[in-house]
Length: 142
Image (cartoon, rainbow, N blue to C red; front, top):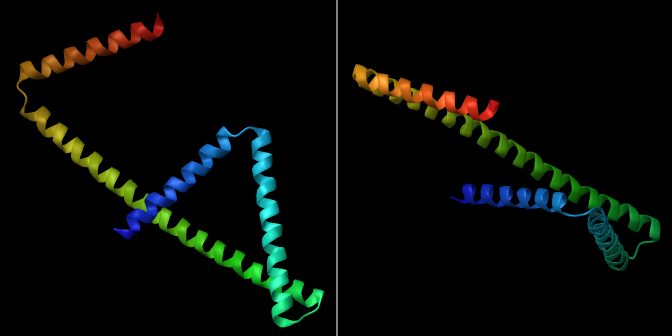
């Protein structure tokens, strides 16, 4: 249950991100990227101040500590992204397998239906199919 909710949330977020990027104009996308950069710098500056005042370090040591903290956060994010990609791969494989099984079941049902039809029923189906293909050909080519 929780896994399916997480899949739905992840899919919704990815879809919203893709739609947003496609829908935004160049200026709005630039503004969004600029805001992300400014918020990153604000986060880094805040972390600098917290580390500097907490551990009473000089500027260089503070920057090294903050770099490794941010590097750890980035690695954790990449790890979660990797786990998500594995989960999506597994989900895609399950979906494709269920689709193949469904296709085989549908083919069996259609074959069984076709074998139980009398000759007049088969003739009606073939005539309807031929008429439909002919109408589509005329519609496309005319």
